[in-house]
Length: 551
Image 1 (tube, helix red, strand yellow):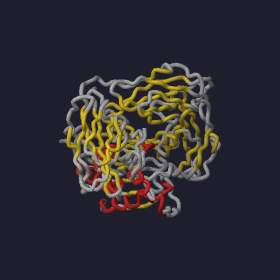
Image 2 (spheres, rainbow, N blue to C red; image 1 turned 180 degrees about the vertical axis):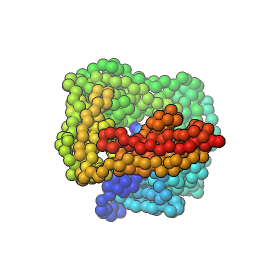
Image 3 (cartoon, helix red, strand yellow; image 1 turned 135 degrees about the horizontal axis):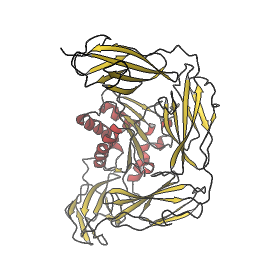
Image 4 (cartoon, rainbow, N blue to C red; image 1 turned 60 degrees about the horizontal axis):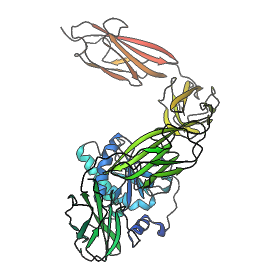
């Protein structure tokens, strides 16, 4: 499911390429397109905002940004509904000292506001950084969200940047205000009369009532200058009822939102696919999926893909419909994954099921076709291409310095059949490539070996440098540091009470050049440390000894 407004935390040349920009025609500015929502259309609606987090720190920030943005009048959509957003925001917390915002040119004003609110930050405009042409912001807060206070400041800066785009209107506008029933109260039954204040300078009211913020499936009507409306047919199952009162002021629709609890009570239940029978084989490349209504479900969203939770075949907000006809289904006997989302009392929940595609095919893993497996790479950048295989629904590419390694490149390629890999070594040593194929619910791989461009320098083991070999350790814990060596692909560290032993410590260090070892003896005995270096497919070592702390 896709959010309608996104915060994009990216940078030119960082996630997306940048190209020379052409000025946008004035008539196509984002403000004009979004204000079309606010003009006297048959049904006013809020700007829909989607927020995507690109890393773990940003995921923590996303919830706070969403909460603050909803107060500005945005309809903040679930992260899964991002493709349906009016504006997109991608959040990233890279750890950089220089916060950065990249915007589509239509959002350059918003980017300028964010830059003003974020000291030491940079801003740039780049339409080609947003492949689908939708307005977007890429916000990299750097280290500016590492503490609770910094998180709040970063979220407020994003909210400030977006404030001009919302439909909640100026905070000083005298919008109509709901008076009765008291906001937040439980409704007395299925028929209620809503009453509101006249506001100031209001030319027209519109009342919407639905089962999600901004929804209007229960009621939607022009109220003229009336300040009350009798509404019947409201549910009586204890769920949350959302009411939006629109006021038309100074040629703009603005609104206030309210929530109520419906009369009665009911135990909610997610909707479930009923037809075709889950687990069955589909009849062809087109199928009509039907589901029950569930209990207290106000909205449905359907995903269909080729892995659990995937939506590459179908992804659509179904509103209150309980069926969907889906075309272009595969006919290769592969597993089809269906996720049916149910919106219950303000939150999305889902049920998963699987089907077997019509037809049959012998699954075949994808194979690298270029560069020729076993060849010498031409330089530090190479475009790897592979065949589609048969019944493969997804690809993943590893490039590393040992078989199955991925220290150079590791990326989910989706359905792409090529990948350009940069920063390849130029030392004449082996480069290992593993191409993964997702076949009928399981990952399988083919391995390849290439020779890096350039010539091989002489291999050289890492050597312990700190603490100084032969010295006395300071206590029961010590941090050992060593040189990176030459052409070393991996380190392993032993510490023991006899030469080559690891009865105190033994650990894979990857490419790190230091390790802290605890639980060292403090009795003055000799401690032996062995540093292993993996060079050209073989482990080599260098030894050092120390005197333990103690008497």
